[in-house]
Image (cartoon, rainbow over all chains, first blue to last red; front, side):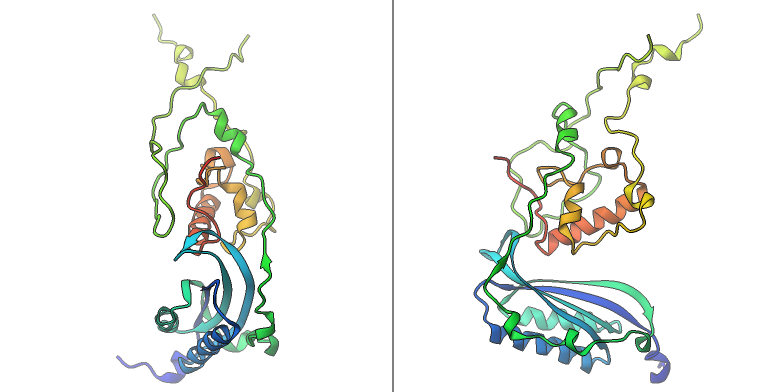
Length: 186
Length: 86
């Protein structure tokens, strides 16, 4: 069943794609990939909302022997096939070590979203070697986790350790021991 | 002899965490975003595991959102899958 093009273009979805370049990537490669992303969005009839560069950050784990990478963030409107096309193209670049697309919202009218011209242009001067180190955050629940007498929390689902290092032999799903009762009643 | 429920030890067992209010329900300005690992770090243990709801005090809906955000952040290497102890 063919849908008239005018009706089809009225509403689209908002996606965001994050991709990571390896630590040896150059500004030329970054520019090339960024312009390719913009080109794909235009070609598929979408609208590029934002193209951002988060800088060189430390990765939480090694990805293809890289401990640091350049993070890029693309926010765009498009139809159902645009995200697939973006990911297909990102796979072809060797310097891209990770990517992920997420749908943010459905049913958006492109004319309601305004775009600032400086948001969708990648400036190679921002591609600097200086690394951004996140501030360390002390875990809040470490004490609570220790209080339960070394028991392992039962995980309901997971673990999608698709890229992460394996856990060193810790028994999973240990049974909860009954806790000592609090003598509240006098 | 009447059966006394008070003798049952399991009924007296209290939860380990405090009975907290879900911080996302209480304060609408808190936003769960997988792109912000600094805020999500409050919901993982020191070994990198996701904290259960009975400890964190989240409501069911927000716990699901937090879990999804942490898993997305893990995929894109913003958060670790596991942290090896020192």
